[in-house]
Image (tube, rainbow, N blue to C red; front, side, top):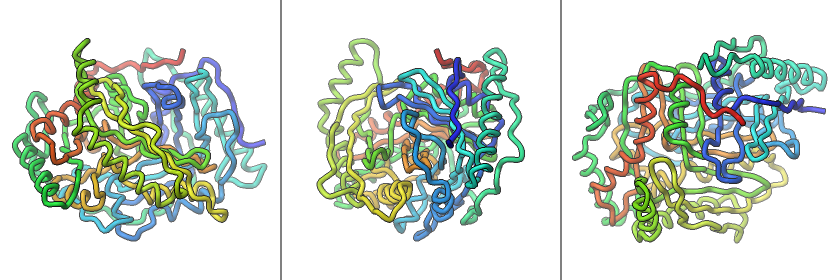
Length: 501
C-alpha cells in the first residue's frame, strides 16, 4: 500500500518547483538541465527532512555515516518499479575534506566559509521527474513512522502539503515563492559529531577582467605553484595532481536566483542545489561521481579540457582534444586509479571500461570523459544502502579531482593550495531507502554564505603541463559561474525558466 504516489498533470518544471519550495527547510534539488539519454533522464526535489546529521570537521577514523545507518535501516524498503529511482532517502553534501575520515591527511591553512565537512538529511517525500516520458510524480513514504496506520497518516499529510504548494504556487510573473514552510512534521536532527574550527584570513588578489572578484592566487603565484607540482612529478612523488584556485565575490542575493542564473549560463547533466541554515550550494556539474543501480557501481571521470570556440574552430578544438597525448594520458591515469578504487568493493574480474576518452561538449568547454563499471561484492548480511555507503568509503574523494597516487596527491594539494576546498570537489548525493545511489562531483559549483559567494576552478597537472595553459584553463572553467554571478547580481535573472512542456 505504501508509499503514496500521485502523478501530476501540467506540473512545474524542476526550476519552478525549487522557487516554490524555497522557504522550506533544507531544500535539495538534483536536476538534469542538459539531457543526454539516460544520463539526463531524471530530476528530483525534496525538502524538510525528518532527521539530519552534520560533521563540522572530520577526523581520521571517524565513521561519518554512524548516525545515518540506523535511520536508513529502520526505513529500508523496496523501490516501486516503473518510477524514477530516488523515492526518498538520504541526500546531502560530502565536502572534499571528509576524505580525512579514511586517510591521515593534512588540511589547507585557511577556511573562509567554514561549510561543514558533511551535511545529510533524511527525506520521506520527493518530487520525481522522468524527462524521457515527460511525467512527474510525488512520492510520499510516511517515514519515520513505521506502524502502518501512523505511517499512512504521515504520508497522506506530506502528499497533501506538497501537492498544495505545486497547485497553488503563484507562477512565473512573481519569480519568487512565498510558500510557507511546513510545521509540526519534522523530527529533531541527529547530533553533530565535531565542532568547527575558526577560519583564517588569506591574502587575496583581484582577478583581471572581473571587477569585484578576487582569488587566493595571483597569476604568477599560480604559475609558480604549477611548476612546483611538476617538480613533485619529476621527483617521482606523483604522476598527476589537481591544482585549483578559489575565487570570491560579494553576494547578498537569493541563492535560488543564483541557481537559476547558473543553470542557464552553464547547463549540465548533474546540476543541483542544497540550502541549509545560512549557506547554500549552487552547482551545475557535468561530472557524475559514482552511481549504484542493480548492484553495479559506475563512475564517469572527466580529464582533459578545451574552451568552446565558434563554428569550425569548435570542431578543430574537439579533434585536437581527442588526439592530445597529454590529455589522454591524464585521463587514463585517473581511469586506472578509479579501477583500483572500485576493486576494493567490486567482484574480481568485473571491472570494465565501456567508454574511454570520449569528447563531450558543454556551454563553455569540451571535456574528455571515461566510464568505469564494476559489480559490487555481495554481502548477504548487509543492507543495500550499506553497500552504497561502503562504496563511498572506498572511492571518496574522486580521483579526477585529486591525482595519482591519490593520497600523496592530496597531501601535496593541502600543502600548495591556500584555502580548504570545502564542498568544491566533494559530492552532492542521494541514497534511497532501497540503496539506489547517485552523486555528482561538485565542480562548476558556487557556495554562498555570509554575504560572500565562492567558486573554484582547477585542472590536472602532469609532467607535460604548460603553466600558462593550466592557468587559462581554470578561467575557462570558471567562466559560466562568473557569468551567473554577474547576471543574478544585477537582477537580470528575475524569472524562473525551464517550464515543463
